[in-house]
Length: 560
Image (tube, rainbow, N blue to C red):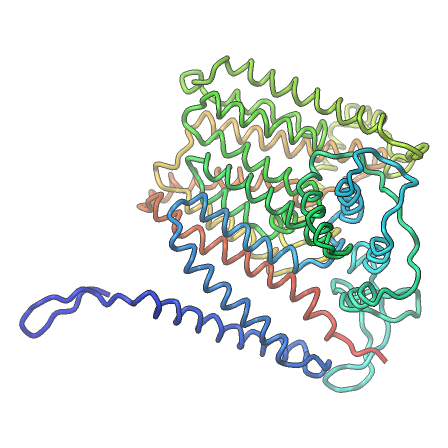
């Protein structure tokens, strides 16, 4: 609104709310929205009929609403874009850490056991070495993937008509032990673990021989153990340790990026990114390294510190996931000679990245061999039908067939761009996030259209070629290492592998939109709009994840 005038023509300044009044209003609105949302849960998901006191979901939603309002007001006072984005990543990531039940992230059971072992000071690997009893109880209470891997069907009681009806738990957080066993919810697993009843089968160390990427989570677990927390507390502490590492690396990426920062913030805050960043998976730090490495080419000039930071991130990524990440060593070559201000030329730094990556790969592999005990022969993942040499020969002798395999796999998986709401072991689909994820990416791309955000044809074209090679390389690597020879689809691919590609896609869309729309948007205005768009979407993703696991699914059937 503009300034007001009196009858005598004098102008008054616009009304400015006192700070206390603004805080009181925003927090009151947050509390009111929390009450409304909790009422939606109670009515639509039948919480009252399930015997859940109305006070608890109401208090939870009010606390979330008030906390969100307080976070918005506090972040408005932070002027630095990188710091503001990192704070938003950390806060939303904490919600994801607790919205996701234990051991539901891909391979989190193995990652939990390895991280817990490191937190106990075990830096070798022994297949016969066990864990405390409460760790075994946690593993027994949360047996891996929750939903489709435990799909069951039967006859139950309709919550509205009270009559018998068939049910199917596909896509819901329900599972069934045995053909005629009781269908249970996530709450039953928490109750089973917390009750501490019965003897759990002992667990031993997993087939996992990495140390470096699990150190942040292990540090969190070590602190939890010093505080006397049990296996469940250590799990959440480990997730928070990984989240802190993810946040710090993302902060570095936002700080060093000089162009297209809304796109970087968007991908960092995507529900899929936060789901992995707030888990025990080594993908937490790996994804953050990807975003950091892609942020550096947005700098017009590369100094020695820029090149050194890139080399460190590249070498770490290769030590975390060997061979697949070797392609990243070429990105320094995209910097034009006139823009290269680092000591040593571009080829020397690319060679340093390659040499360091190969060295750490060999070090990790040999360390895993020399420091393992009592494992015996480790079977190839995927069984005897998987053979890397034969699969590579098959690809080279049948290139057109392999092209059909690539295209068919992309088609069956919605190009992986339509699976941004597919969590867990590809068995928890949240359709709303899958539908809106590409739109949010598009919105972030449009925020990168000011003329000052242009990367230049050389770098943008080079990044496009890199994206195509990286995508094909990732799919081919999974075809060679995990897929039976000659199979017509690629096994093991998941959406998180393609998150760096969607970041580069956003940069490409921004370049096209910049030419077609000639926008008047400024970079400063775009960065102000990026946080509510991307942070709000991350908040919605965390709430929906929690709703699926802890609120919504159980209402579908009242069992006999």
